[in-house]
Amino acid sequence: MSKWFSIVAPFLPKVVTSIDMAAIEENAEALGFSRICMMENAGSTAANFIASKTNVKEKNFLILCGTGNNGGDGFVAARHLRNMGARITVVLVGRPQDIRSAEAKANWNLISSMDDVEKIIISDSSETGIVKRLLEECDYIVDSMLGTGFRGVLKEPFVSIVKELNSSNKTVFAIDVPTGLGPEIIEEDLIVKASYTITFHKAKDFLQKYSNSGEITVADIGIPLEAELYAGPGDVRKVVKSRKKYSHKGDYGYVLVVGGSETFSGAPALAALSALRVGAGLSIVAAPESVASSIRAMSPDLVVYELPGKHLTDKALGLISNLMEKVDSIVIGPGLGLHEETIEAVKSLIAEARSKLLPTVVDADGFKSLKSSPDLLKGVIATPHRGEFKHVFGREIKDKWFETIPELVELTRKYEFTILLKGFETVITNGSRLKVNKHATPGLAVGGTGDVLSGIIAAFLAWGNDDFSSATAAAYVHGDAGLRAVGEKGFHITASDLIGKIPEVMKAFDKEE
Image (cartoon, rainbow, N blue to C red; front, side):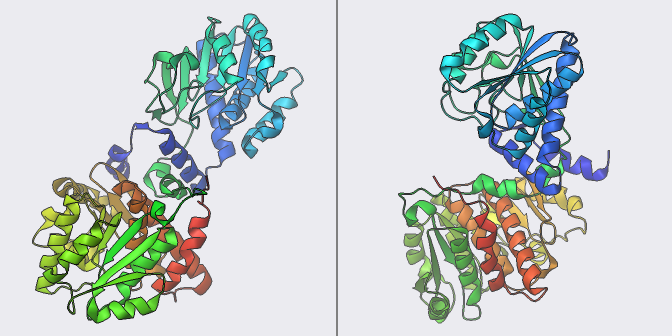
């Protein structure tokens, strides 16, 4: 076992949710492991498992398939079982034109070309009597109707088919999950009662919720562990909030950025604007009066509150406290400076945000202000680069990202926070989970890009996501925006160029209800 693997493996979960699994598959595809390859491996693995439990040759198999990718796995399994000598009947529950993915369609077309495979299409509950006859004639059943994407209440014709199947007393092999079983509370008699469940890559958290899964086997289908370890588009899709037709800006989160000083005006504006570009409903900047007007002039999209003085002091705490009551997340730090009274004010703000259970990003000078009080990191997301990390903890970061994991885990567990350690390979951990973002460019090594990252994180937090998921998704979006900006302008970009690319990145994840 390599040193790299031994370090990262303990942070990869043994059990995943259906949402996690969808993200893993999307990340695997982004790494180059195609969906068609995943489907082929899943179906062939299921067929081989079935063959290990039965005498396949000359046996009658009834394979029930839906129109999603779970059905596609079933088509592949049917092809392999036929090649092993089984007699196959495939029932498609739904219309061929409704098969959703290109991969599933390709495998349906393959099955359609096999003359010795009987194909039956059921699109209405009135046709389920056919299934009853087929159940009587078959030796074994393969359930590949609905997979991990199933939500809500089981509908016809699935209800009638599941009831017929469960009363058949035949051996049932469920592919990935028994039809009707999902993360939501459902009626147990509307779940296929499987004798065996062949689930893929990782165990699903809800599989043992009921007894319907039978004997559970977790099968490897070749998804690389990097699909779980490296931040990818699946991690972004997990955190994106869908847009409802009848909604208002308050539904998409208010972000508060506390930053700026007599020296720095751009940093808080960059953080606030990036949150808006991600999709936050409102960005509010609280900045000293020495720079508030400059920030206001940068964009009419920002709501700017003036704080007394040239830099943050305890005189501003009352106003900021009131603003905290109106927002869904807060960024503390961009451009604040390190005046002694600013450091003390930062400590008070972080403590108050924690008492209000307000999701908090501590960045730049905000993080450096905690050198003497790292215990205040509890519950926040901290986003230091190597120099800031050394300033607070007095430790050098090792060159190879995986060699610094033990140290980061030690600190995040000790102080109970989430760290996003910025670099070409950005590391995110909360002490129990680990992600690395390699989707980036050296073009990001320019002033202000870290402020943009903080604003992206804050937007995801404002949508109600947890700290680790928000930081992971933000790292990927930030890196992708950087790659797009560099692709257009080379290594001559500014942080503002980065903000301009965020909508291009996020558009791919837009969801409307």
